Image 1 (cartoon, rainbow, N blue to C red):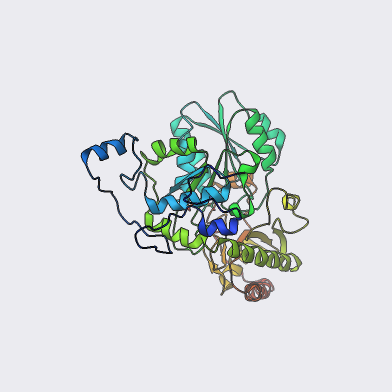
Image 2 (cartoon, rainbow, N blue to C red):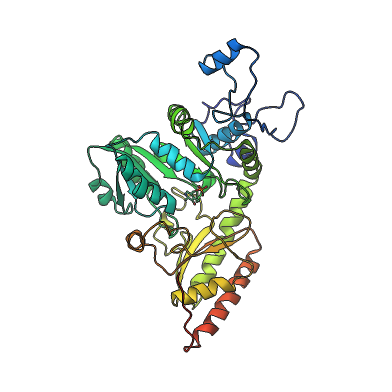
Length: 417
Ligand SMILES: *Cc1c(COP(=O)(O)O)cnc(C)c1O
């Protein structure tokens, strides 16, 4: 998809590796700074009362107040829009800010949303626990079942929301089906593309209307920011900026935007390493006798494997697995990891390990998790940028300790995972 509608100071570069570094950049006319200047300011001074009035009226370009727009933030927005092959973007304070601002800008009382039954825990909480308070109906559907998606359609259905691969069990959804379905029935489609980034998957190629990211994850990549971004056509971004962003206020800080611009410069080399490390870790775990099952689309027996090369360039850097053992064993295993940090989040240089049922997906009740296919024994790893041998060695020593522990039948660890 062409991104020629973006107002670059120069012809937009075509290759994503180049776009990560150059797209959206405004030449620093005053000093020629190579790095993007950080406009850490809340407000912008007008030359005159007339100029201020003209900016508020939208009759003259220029910045007014950072909740409404900021030059540093703007570079980030144009960069991610170019990477997604879409016209425009709105950066937000968190990924959840992006989920809320993109959905609530278009849904109102009496509308119906079709959501994937397995999604990020707080997206689920927003839709299931908050939307009901505002009279927005939600159906949670297994979106691998295309008939179930069709059956969920109601006369008041306004929007469909999903993520792929699904957090945390890496189920892959068919974007071509979802895009066509939404176009056919004239409902807005929203895809959370956090797990793959636009370098590995561009939902707009399949007719998806709105793409959102937790920029906290791979886009920033360094674990020092929480942020989000919404990408779409110019009209929808304008609507979001003038309603749910302006009036609800989950605007990104310019400093955080600046850090993400810096992080994006290395996104393409980082994603290559995340993917190759994750593939090797997945293959190692799949062979290990202490592991019952590995969930990673890069493994040939994964049901999502067939989408690689079609809708996603590679399988990404996150995998999940079930141990041959009890919940107690799982907790013991996680506690033995030394290099891998026990932490939620993903997409950082550091490898992170966590237990979805008690951590990221605790906003689900036990019943809701069961419906969404998130088992209590599932462990998720965000494979980092360390040498893969060091990652595997750490997992190996933790598994050996766990197996030793399993041989002592008299000890039962109590566990509240
Ligand atoms: C982390 C995450 C979010 C929420 O993003 P925050 O930046 O934590 O608010 C949404 N979707 C997915 C898939 C995520 O991983």
